[in-house]
Amino acid sequence: MRKACLSGSFFLVGLTLTHVASARDVDVSDVAQLRNAIEAAQPGDRIVLANGTYTLSSSPSCAANGTAASPIVVVAKSPLGAKIEMNNLEGFKVTGAYWTFEGLDVKGVCANDDDCEHAFHVMGAAKGVVLRKNRIVDFNAQLKSNATNAGAGFATPDDLLVEENELFDTRPRTTSNPTTKLNIDTGDRVIVRANYIHDYQKGGGDGVSYGAFMKSGGKNGVFERNLVVCAKSHTGGTRIGLSFGGGGTGAAFCAPAFDPRVPCDPEHTGGTIRNNVIASCSDVGIYLNKAKDTKVLFNTLVATSGIDFRFASTTGLAIGNVLAGKIRGRDGGSFTGSENLQDVTTFDAMFVDPASGNLAKKGDLSALVGKGTARPDVANDYCARARTGAYDLGAHQVSLGDCASQLPAPERPAGPGTPTPTPTPSGTTPVPGLPSSPTPNEPAATSDSDSGCAVVPARTNTSLGGSLVAIAGALLLVWKRRRRA
Image (cartoon, rainbow, N blue to C red):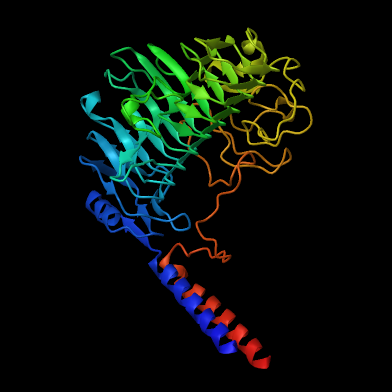
């Protein structure tokens, strides 16, 4: 029996050593090296881009599969130090699962705006993709995600996480193609968190653009703690903030049927929009198009026409929001509303620069303080501070004081006494923040393993020796104890 247990221990360590050995840091400094590293990627690889400019005229294919415990990571050595210029229709084409892209400065440089569609195209079975702390500029859609036909049925890119990115265009897009900074078609459990989305316009066609939407039959998506300023540096067109449903989906492209005979209704089910600041939109700040069972909770909307629940399948809750304009049910849409402060005309008296999203206190905020009822699904506020006692209306728990930064907080403090991030200096471009832990509103991510072994793989080869020593020492201790027994 002892021999069997010991053999099992050595078998386990053999698997562990194989896992450790497969985790690599791959340093790249030019486009050829970047392409080679992506093509040869294995679970656990960290493809580290040296500072400099990388010009891509064709799309890297990210087809290998990482795992939840060992994703494939493409990361800048210094935050935003790797500048990727894209002069092609699409940038990174991601069809493999569990890729992470972090700290990259990505810009579309096409002479014709129709030729720069997406910086990232996430497709099919590309589950668990993460975009974090990137700056992505001048694309019709910085991110496009959609299902693909896998032969035996359609695969959808579920569990996408987009957090702490800055997404904007330096000028209106000269195109009639869809213009949406996050164009998320299909996919369940998508989270869009703590991003700064601003300045976007479709210059042609119907002129309608969105900051971000989820549609095409997805479920249980979350928009939380984002700052959306539809028009800050340039104006024009019809600009909408956040949406479940967007402008709708052709039936053949809609989950779960993907059948041209089956209408796409609902466009999204079970979505949540909470603790967002949305400002300076020429149309509604939140648009719900065939969005079933949607919760719109404790958002602040400045200089927009309000919130629309539209069409008969759109249902849900609107609670604790503060907005200029109204919350409306349109064309059969319905909602249950409570504790909302509508038609606000005093934002300029209350806050320093509300039109740009700066909600630092300026004047009397008594209309907001303590007017909301506590909810377990809104455990924190826009600043990632724990809400306690009676809730303040809107995205900020203003009774806790100002945020140290007016941008979405990159960290998730445990409570109101935790220090907030360093302010972004006035006049500078915001830089995404430090690595973050799960928000209190969501459960922590789990790995694919149900073995009961919480093994964290080494991230670099330099740690291999130390890991081997530690494992060998642990095994020796076990062996000695078993001998004495």
